[in-house]
Every structure is written in structure tokens, then in C-alpha cells.
Image (cartoon, rainbow, N blue to C red):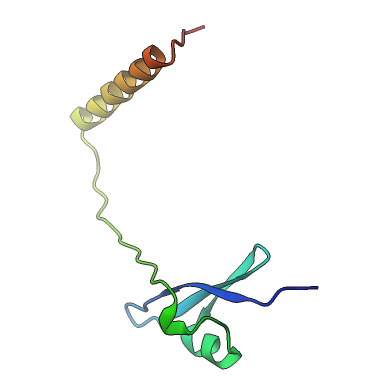
Length: 90
């Protein structure tokens, strides 16, 4: 017996896009517009779905100094983990 689709979260439209909701049933899901969600009578009510917030950040090119620092930070993190977990390089 197939379960009914239920709303998981909603997303507020931006840049001319309509509001939408993610619906799911037994691991399968799809995004539908707010109008489709309401017309098909999914539950819970659209307004009670948690809002998914997607925040985009600007991407910048990393300098050589930035890359060197990231590499040093990674090495330090690995060394700390190895020490904490009594791990050895092979």
C-alpha cells in the first residue's frame, strides 16, 4: 500500500519564482508550487511547513597565501586527529 505524499518544508519564492514545497512519500519526493500543494490538498497546511532558507554567498578567487594557509590548517588538523586517536602514518 503506497503512502500519501506529505509536505516536508516550504521555500519562499525569490526573483519572480513562486513559493514551493517539497513533498515526500517513502523516500521519493518532488518540488511543487504552493498552488499545486494547495490544490492537491497535501498536509500539513502550507503555512505550517518549516521554511527552508538557502543563503548564497559570494565566491572569490583564493590567493596563493590563502591556499597556503588552508593547506597548513589541513595539515595541522590531520596531525591533531592522529595524535588524539593514536594513529600512525603507513
